Structures are given as structure tokens and as C-alpha cells.
Image (tube, rainbow, N blue to C red; front, side, top):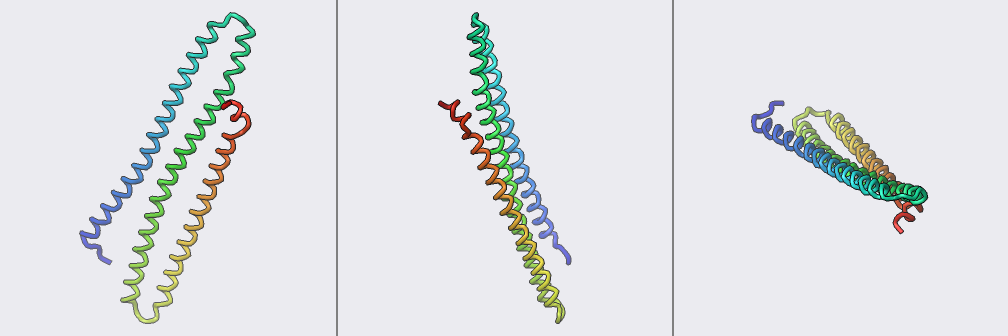
Length: 177
């Protein structure tokens, strides 16, 4: 099967476009993760400075002890929120990659069916069974991919549910009061 230069150019351009879209998802996600990290580091530094200033003003050991106890819960809440945000960004990245992969699989399937149809037109008599078997194999592969995609989505939804549940624990609710 001879590829014309125009087809080769179109395939190359499509591959470059696909690679660019994957890179955009990856870099966009990395950028969001870095921004989240920088925000967390700035808040941690600010909290540390504020806490050090407050502790340096305390002359009474009892107040210092009480103050130290009040530091734990806000830190835990911020840590929980930080990891929830990390999870959300990671989920968005995964969804972006998943969408691109689904598009690529759909395009591949379309091209495979077109190729099989062309093959069927010029195939010798009696080869219908072979072409039908190839189409059936393609359909089975699509079904397996669809099932894997559904399972991955269910896993992601379950993980999200658990993270939201953990963020809504009684300890987290006490801190918000």
C-alpha cells in the first residue's frame, strides 16, 4: 500500500498536533501543581513566622503550652486541603489524557474500518470471513477499551468520594467552627 506524499504529510501533521496536545495537558498540569506548591510553601512560611512571633511574646508557660496545642488542627486542615487540591489537579490531568487517548482510539478505529472496507472491495472471493473476523476483533478491542475506561472512571469517582469523605470528618468540621 503506497502512501502519497500528501497522506504522509497529513499523518505527520496529525501526529505533531496530537503530541502538542498531550504536551499542553502535561505542562498545564505541571504548572498548576507548581502554583499549588508555591502557594502552600508561602502559606507555611507565613504561618511559621506568625507562630514564632506569637510564641516569642508569651511569657507564661501555660499559655505557650495551650498555644502549641491550637497549632495542630489548622495545620492538619491545611494539609488535608492541600492534598485534596493535588488530587483534583491530578484527576484533571488524567481526564485530559483520557480524552486525548479516547480521541486517538476513535480515529484509529475509523481508519481501521475504512481500510478493512477498502480491502473487502478488492479482496478475492471467499475472503469475507477473514475480513469479518478482523472487524469482529476490532469491535472486541473497542469493547474492552470501553470497559477499561468505565472501570477507570469508577475508580476515580470512588477515590474522589473517599477524599471528600475524609475532608468532611468530625475533626475537620470542628476546626471549621
